[in-house]
Figure 1 (cartoon, helix red, strand yellow):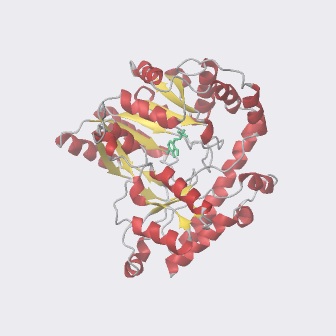
Figure 2 (figure 1 turned 120 degrees about the vertical axis):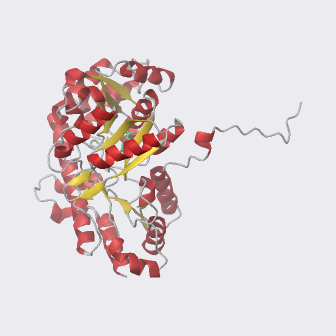
Figure 3 (figure 1 turned 90 degrees about the horizontal axis):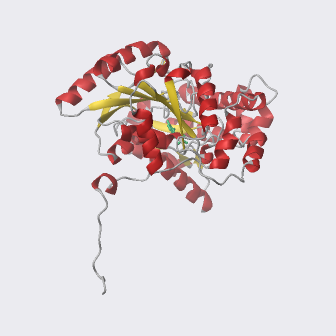
Length: 430
Ligand SMILES: Cc1ncc(COP(=O)(O)O)c(C=O)c1O
């Protein structure tokens, strides 16, 4: 029997209008433009550019023969080492957490959102995937504006409280809050001095904290304490190898799941068992070395982080000198310049939103950026997210390895970033 002419379309409502994640879309746009011969200065997709440390590459090759499934929650030895490694650095009490190893922290964030019923609270701006993940689960998203100040990325406890109350009065049921520090898109950290008041609101209102600490080892002024250290029963931490070791493609993430939240570890593990089943066995064994505290790897991580800091601070200072609002970054590899001071002049050029700004920057000077709207900012806010990692990481490591003052080397090892910064300044001053 023929079914010609009869088409079935039953894509579910929560997915049908879901666009491709803006960061991945920016990557594809950059790759396509470059492939067609256009010179693109890639400040859209953010990917740490450093090579795989040779010892880790060898470990991966050595373990290629492991072809069996591992435990759903991950190789026990890897989970224990990761817990020790991250808790030594972020100050959480390791005895209060179990660990899940996942294929990147993104899926662990999704599993946590799936496991805990209710609606999601996110500060604005926030990373691109939290809200779509909530939407995929049919949950509502409650936004709370963050203040961006020289002290950092600040969420006022009163704003949080009133957002929770007004969401409830609209019939929403906020139960979980995702915080991200160091923060993508702003490059700022939540000041640890702000934690107690935030924890206080969350405890009183029954809000679970998911602390996304994927950039915790890319912090420019020493390790950052986790908010979960103050509230271990009411917080989970997500982290992984993608950023501090430039191993995004290895897909290794860790979830520190509080023992004090009954049933949560079992729920996340059950979700894992029905979806990703386990992380690649050779990769998990190689990852053991990444969280072993081995001195050569630690020195590599330290140098990569110093290079990220030098580049991000260099670009931020140059934009700020040109009159663009751009705070000194504290971690990660992103900047969040706000072109508000140029609003009137930009309006004469037809630029009135972050999207038109991002498009004009690409058309006029080949700089690929992401509009603030991708991170939840209102359209008229003239903010962009710039990632500052379009350089040859291997060459940068070589040039910087024997230097303490890296600021003066940035132009030499990151010529495309330098060119992009000059182009943005010229564009803003036009
Ligand atoms: C803020 C933030 N959280 C989580 C992730 C997910 O990283 P992964 O899944 O590679 O661990 C990213 C990656 O871009 C990110 O920027």
